[in-house]
Image (tube, rainbow, N blue to C red; front, side, top):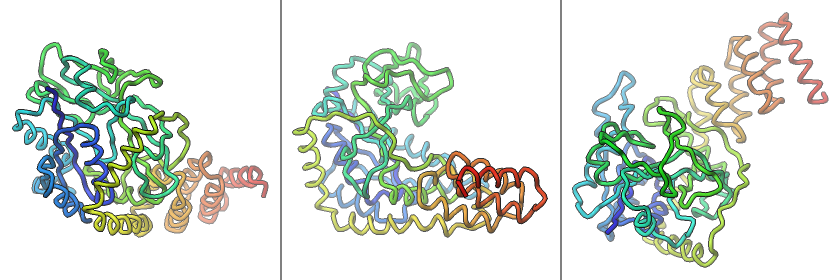
Length: 384
């Protein structure tokens, strides 16, 4: 009999973790293992309140891994080690046949939405690794939508992998997307149950048919613009930069639609709403606190903004905070060449901001010919 455990490592997920946990149980996962670290909100209270009445929720705190810091005072492998810890803990339960490490913004589903994870895997036969691709979701129209309210996606070659017990017992190196297994003749399948083909030997992605996948992972890395900005302030476990620098801006451009049965999706929404009730007060407070976090981006040390302006542009594309950060940069940066080059990098993103920075560069180097030529170009293109 197939029994699947979902594993996640979380920080400051109080507004969201309830839906993720209940999504897993709706989809047939038998147990949920959660490692909490570095949290500053009520994540622990929410998860512990849920676990009191559900013994299939196993909760651990792995902040202790920061007792092994690098020169910056953090354990940059905290997420990897936390997942390894959870895999080890879950493996003690001999009833579990498969293990699925996921982030809390990743929601596995079968295109037959009523099919459980157990039913899905039972149809795939024996394997060591089964890799499921991301269905990256467009930005939501309003904050705190339920999963699958927004069904605009694009399917990507990035994956997360379900591991058999044999694979877990033979992990050579844990990687977040496709772990390395010390075993001859490793059986690695894609979501359709066919032999997986990597993009190349080093990648953590596999080749997929984007229009034909029997299961996907809804990746809610954007949510609404307000939430996206708040989520940026959480940092990455491996970085001291005050923003998550592995995001690529906010947008609503994905056009592919997840076609879901209306009766099944209503049953799903009703299930999530019902199981929010025991921790509703925590969730509402956490929502308010989360949205307030967005303003922390502008309160960062101005030297950090200047030094890492390319990263700030990368993550703030499409948001209302990009002009405000550029305003700070235009006053704080003392290098005409940096201002000029940053202005040029912004040309395809926001020409008004390019003009602003190029004029700031002109103040520092009024004789600069490239600067003068670019200002004239921008004014013409903007019809000024």
